[in-house]
Length: 307
Ligand code: ADP
Image (tube, helix red, strand yellow):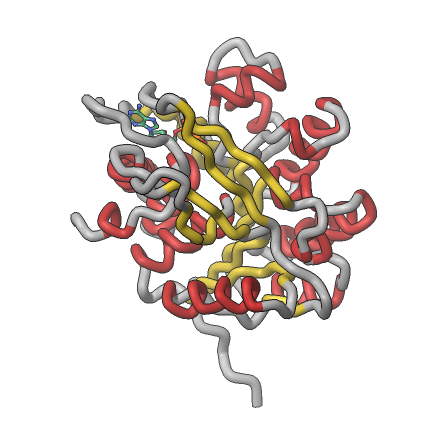
């Protein structure tokens, strides 16, 4: 006898990296872990204790990979879809601060996460066992061409089976060989999704959209039922099952660090999406993101404790 699957099983797919961030002590760095789809999972697990949150990735068998799994366990993120690969390790980035300006240095070329979609059977099983599947343009960017095509095909099958497929385009030109390769893969990712969550500033630069409505229309033309265009402090533009509108974002007097603004917005939005009230869901995203940008770092625990 098979037991019924619990409702509301959320699966994110992507790369979580080790993060070295500067402390107040000159020359000292703190070890943490972050990554776009992971950040969204982390916030969602805190906001929705009843949601079963899992993260599909590939890691190594070294102590750094194990420390990352400790964070998963502490954060309530299930690791049953994490592949442990021999003699591999995870990607890393370091944040350096110079005259108050942050810059990022990456070591992710050899990251085990590039292999996360190598086994089509594992993907198919993971997708069939979950209700909501979340990925981003960075998930697509780190995959070799062949596994990216397999990954998109598996998502298409999951969409046809009625799963909710959520995509944040998160454009990162540095991870792609050419801008055309990036924009073409992003549109393929959107085409297999049911919810697309772009940020206007990036889309304007790489797709030459003149305004947020152009971004909305470009994704809507693919037949996607829900498109939410984030735009920093400006109103969020939305289209949901044929109903469209704008949602104003409450102003903030002091922005401290915009890291994970979009990732946390997505979690706040998804935590309320099941209600069917799209404006209430957007409000949830905007309120969480507002708290996150008023603190330093990607994972801001206190931002989820104020409701
Ligand atoms: P990304 O991090 O993907 O570039 P955005 O900059 O578009 O994302 O921001 C995502 C969300 O974060 C916005 O829709 C908004 O709710 C919130 N946000 C970001 N910057 C600000 C700001 N300066 N003031 C108020 N809210 C902000």
